[in-house]
Length: 440
Image 1 (cartoon, one colour):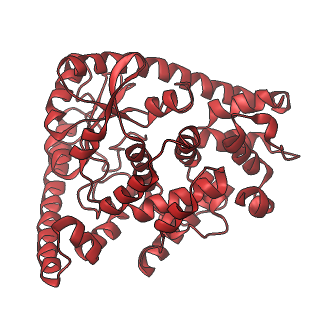
Image 2: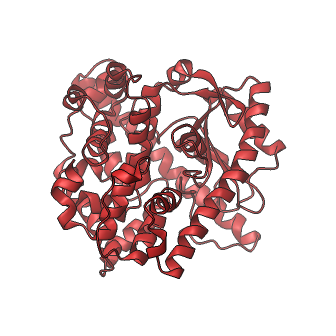
């Protein structure tokens, strides 16, 4: 296993312990705890990686809670308690939503969060998520929103832009309770339109099978679709991954970015369903969707660092060549910033500004790189999107992309202006840096 055999000497003891927890949380006795752990750092990084429930149980099984000073122990216990409370609140609401959706014939798959927490970890308090993500057919988005309105879960956060903006350029609509405690995201897609992904979402829902979640009817994604959905969401946030897959500090980079549990989710799906996954279909879907490098990079991490069972031929079929030199350079800067913050070193002020603005817009600075790739895609994308990889098809796509880019630029200015005056009338902050998304 890469982490323990090669890189443990480069990691600090508390970082090694977190990876040990991620690998051995089901069988804590198999883990070897490092000496002289910085317990406050362990708890801080564990909370940042949303691992509090897992870590608390792991340390308890290792008789390690007595080693924690009072304050870090209290922080860890409080974090786990918040997860339990969140899981209870979200679980009760989700049950109501799923029953209402079933009554109206709206097939609903639950992404990440409570679904993974309940089905993979067997405990909704392990990974409740920051919101409830549901995936429905595009024709059912309006009906799903109507159900949430009936539940008094609506457009209660004034910072949101008009629904038309998200409908045209996003992947979901957001709704929340008046106290902003409970959030829903109604998805019709897994990523934004201006990417090189070509996912057939109707087919995803067609492959889903009837199941139950928290005692309520739900559409269970097929295992290949589940793996790919978790992978795409992961790399959508850890956008640097294909660029730094061979970075010697990758284990630390993942912790610095708070992404450990996202990888554990994927690894645990594979461990739990080792003999059931149709790997050939999984690879074929990744190829059809343009997600080969996404899936390949995540599977390499899960196999090499989390001991996930991935057949060797699958890894060979999902090569990761990495992006162009410009994107690699940018991604190296991104991970250097994240790592500096993680280690308590002064980060670049320029990259701090760029990454702060990155969370404030749909047309993000980092996404400009994706836009460049979208405007000048390879022949593989053209064949997947249009059935032909000819030069003329590439020219057609370029002008189509320019039209899409023009529309999102106009809409960004228009709806930002509309939002500004609406917030001003309501005496809310009009800052462009207000967070427009809830972390998953």
